[in-house]
Length: 348
Image (cartoon, rainbow, N blue to C red; front, side):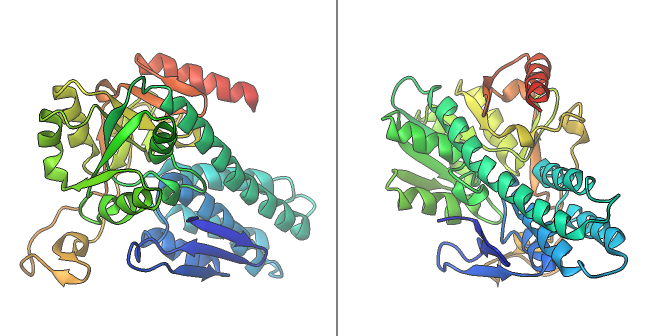
C-alpha cells in the first residue's frame, strides 16, 4: 500500500484517517487539498509530509502559471505549505529544496521551464526516499545480532514515507533476515497510529504483532517480552535530541530503566542542522477534540481543559543509536551528527 502517487496532472494521497477500515484515495489537483490533508493527518509521517508538500508546490505553480504576479503568488503558496505543520523538519527541507530549483528560473521568467523542473524535483524527492528507506532498513537490521522481539511507537512504516518505511523498514528487513520474532505496537493515543496503521501494516506482511495500550509498555519491558525499541523521528537536532510522536519520551525512559536499547530510524532530511538542542523544537499542539473524542464519540466531560501536544522530545542520553542512510551513529552525538553533516555536505 503506497501513501501517495503522482499521475501527471493528479496527485493521489491515501487517506490515512480512514484506515484500517476503509481504503480511500484523495484526488488532489489543487495544492490547498494537499495542505488540508497535511493539517488533518490524512497524510502523515515526516518523510511523507515532505514529499507531499513538494508535489503540492508543483500543483500550486501550475494553478497560477498564467498569472502576471506569478512569483509573488508562488512564494506565498510555499509559505502557506510551510504553515501546515510546525514540527516535522522534512516539510521545510523539501520546500527549501523546491525553492532552490525555482531560483534558476526567476531572472528569465521561464515559467514553463520552472514547472517542468519542479515536477522532476518532486519526483526525485519521492524516489530518493525509497532508496533512503532501503538503506536505513539494511543498516538497522545489522544491529540485531540474534532473534529479538521489539516494541515500536506510532507509525514509521511505508505509510509514513514514500517507500519501505524507517523504523518499520528496519523491522521488515530484520524479520526477513530471521532476526525479529515479534513486534509489540503501542496504540499511540490520541490518534491511534499504532493501532490503526502499524498493526495493520505488519499484519498485511504477516509479521507477528501484538497491540498494547501505551500504558502497558513498562510492564511489557519488565516482563522481558521485548529486547529492543525502535521508533521514527520528526526532527533531530545537532546534539542528537529527537522529536517524535507524543509518548516516545516515556517509552525511552522506560527502556533506559530496563536496560533495553532504544533505536531511532530516520533519514538525514529529518536532521535539523541549524538547531542546537531539542529545547528549541516547536511542538505542535492540536485540537482538544482529538483527546475528548474517539471516532466521533465523546469520551470526556464537555468543557474539560485539555492539553494536546502532538510530539515530545527524547533527550540524546536515552538514545542508543540513530540509524540513517549513512549508517548508525552513536554518542557522543554532537560529534557524530557533525561528522554526518560534513559527509552530507561533501556529497552536495
